[in-house]
Length: 337
Image 1 (cartoon, one colour):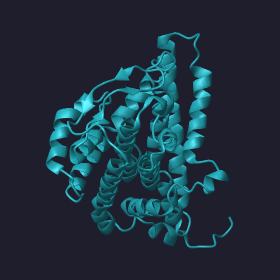
Image 2 (cartoon, rainbow, N blue to C red):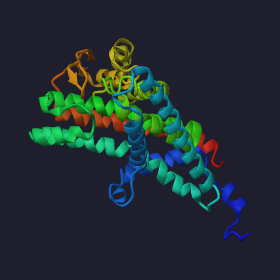
Image 3 (cartoon, rainbow, N blue to C red):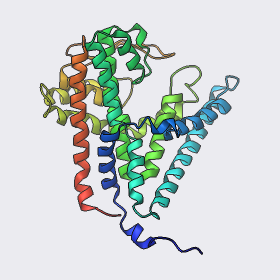
Image 4 (cartoon, helix red, strand yellow):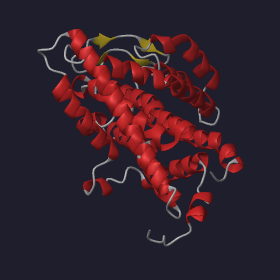
């Protein structure tokens, strides 16, 4: 057996706790963003997950198969992809504990799978374009935030869509990944990203995906149930520290309007954002292959603009900071694994 160039016991004993790694990753994400330069060289982990899902979609979800058959095959795909993602996460986590300062690599990996800065940056770009009266740039920027077709949206519609995406993705792309990493480490984080990616790729209520994507969509609803509610409450508290923020109204809007959303989860952060900033969000919206939904969330202004997007980004940034504070006591009390 070859001797190791370091003391294995020391490497394992000095490994940071998951809360400490998470706090460092959240802060690092604000500093480095989505590292587009790196992913011009190597594929992003979510791109790899998406390729696996695309393979199963092509092989299992064929038009010639019946609904029950496709439902079963979608469930099989869900189990296999989750198991694969969790196993990869477990393997990487176990391997890093054998490396001196392996927690540094884990911090970077977790930061890559969060989207605080990139989400804020892309939303802010849409706001700047609207303030500059550049409708084309605003619509192009919106394409990076959500799956809605921006061609039919006027300026207030683009602004609302950007703010809705910011609030919903605060849960899906920030709070939920952090939550599942804190609970289950890298296996939990990888499994969450796999489920969320499956939902975004095959979770549509179209003829092609209604049956095949049912299990991924329901699984995504289940694992986002707690994070979505945490996200809404974080936005309520963040409103206390936001200029013109209205925390009580945000909380009341959650209680009244969160259930109006078609999703059992997205209504929480969206209603909190609407109430906190006195907006009306939702309204008519078109998704590929789906009908138009007309329910409004919040009873404030619906004709929003680039300045309103800036206010929403400020509120979102404060909520992200509060998320760090939630894990700080655990990081201090559990400094090492």
